[in-house]
Image (tube, rainbow, N blue to C red; front, side):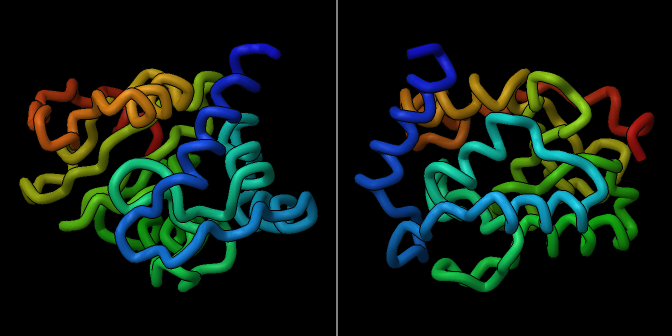
Length: 178
């Protein structure tokens, strides 16, 4: 079993054992056709690990805090809009949302965990617009989706109660992706 398979197995175990706030049950994984429809709508493919989360574990409802948003069909068990809906909503907003950066999880207070689908590692970003200046709303949460998931599984994320350190570095590429 390779590292990705081991990580997916750990995520699946945790996803079945816990339920983020607002989710009644773990949604079923999506099929390949639904993933293809989502990617066609977006105009780009999801990084392999992100696609595997949705097709092998569940269509949202697991992960840090409120959990991953559903990918294509919004307003599911958690009452959240889908990743695709949020992506296009944010692309049409005044924030100058970067192309290929998917909001995968809502933190509350207009904050999102996002995956940069243009990077091989699927870098995870934090969108935190509460300072009011869109030029300073982006931060690097994790250099890879693998590390982000591992941090969640290990309980060492910045969002954990005993780790309130939000001193994340700014995402310098925000302007080049818009």
